[in-house]
Length: 256
Image (cartoon, rainbow, N blue to C red):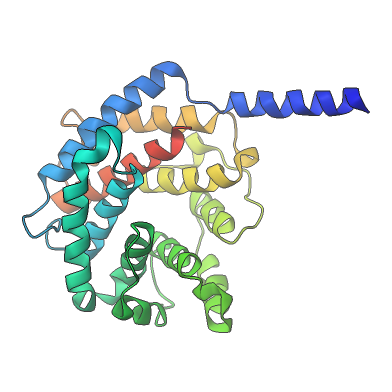
């Protein structure tokens, strides 16, 4: 019996080590994060927003908050506070489709959830993109609204919106269900999918095909552009900032 438990402990330790980020990728990631956040904050407006958009501002704020705003990232705190002030002041004016992301930003960043944003959660539409549906699921889970009858029904409905593998895995993880087998390199095509895949595999690493941390970071580094941002340089600034925020969050999740 002792040998059996010893073998099991060794196996679990080996599995944990097999998912570590390599030293070279860890060092490169740290440099990339610094440069990526420089890009993010350089595009922030004086009033605290990014391009005056609630959804984009919430996404960038979530990326800032993911750093912990300590140590090397302490200088980002004023940017975070300015973004939070903007969202609090404009919560009632934000488009309904931005409500789930707004609620996530307010809760994850430690702010109290605004009544206006909470009310928007009750009207989650049937028709939304997969990424928006995941944000809505995240908001329901973070707010505890899924514990209500209506919230639980909404969670089930939103889970059914997911079709792509990375999104299906993230939806299962949010619902505390078994995550389906996920091959990061085959199943993720952009920064947003890589972010949601890392969210899923952080909760259920056994569902991964190989070392998901190394694979995800390698893919993100391959997609990084010369200016320190992600996204197609021909796209609008908002799209590139969104891609960059997703990429930065994904890299942070990959660092043990």
